[in-house]
Image (tube, rainbow, N blue to C red; front, side, top):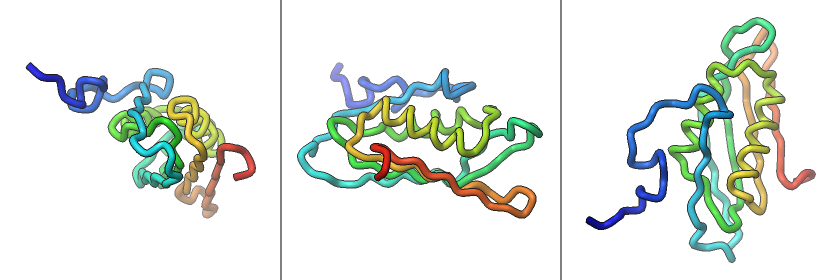
Length: 137
């Protein structure tokens, strides 16, 4: 029996449950077949959710991730599960955006990355937070 590409991944091609927290989630990568080309990968998660750490009420956001890969690329099913793991995570919006950037940079080691969270209005105020790697990008 031959092994397929999904044999290298713990989530892709396998049925699994959503992680209960970002600490439990596993981000996976695969080799970038064009590491000498500076191309951009854009990922959108329009149904991101987390919890307000003060009220416990759900917060929702449209999360945008844009990066220039170096040696590896993020595997999207693992990313989906990782982002879904925030659904019961109490944290401030700004903290979440920075945490996502830190975790994704640690996993994929991109040349550049930006994470933008456009959070739904609370009390009549919309909040958008963005963080970039390397800093100042």
